[in-house]
Image (cartoon, rainbow, N blue to C red; front, side, top):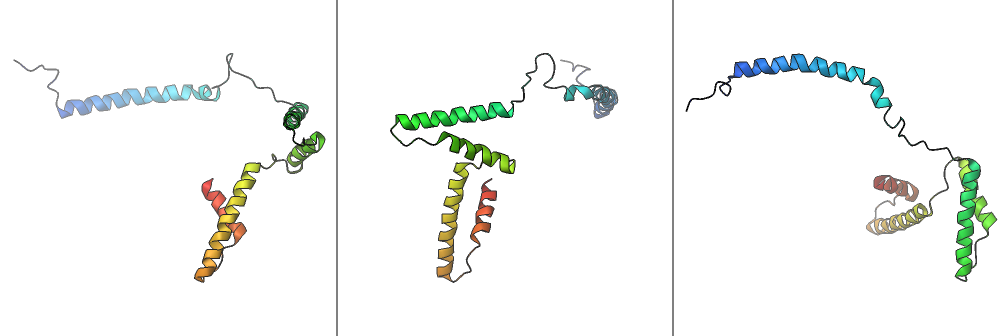
Length: 148
């Protein structure tokens, strides 16, 4: 059986083919990339895009009021002392408006409290070994930064 002439290609022919492909393909790709400049910035826009309306401050306050009223209603139904709606709304919205940041997450406060307990326990252990105690606040911040 005779070998096909197409399959018998040497290294010189392959390098010529590779150089030819690079000379032809690279300029075509560069032109296509240059012409698609607006394409990337238009992603998410167009006739099928979803536009989100900026909700106003009044809508935000109404939603907070509804949530707090629902919480008070559930507490009253369970026989617990319901929260004072106006005070709770003022606390939630006041914390946001004073600093410009959202109100602190209560879970983060609990995590911070647990880390504080761990650091205090570490300090007690370090004192028993005769080592210098750690700065509690600095260690809390370091551990929070480590865990993200």
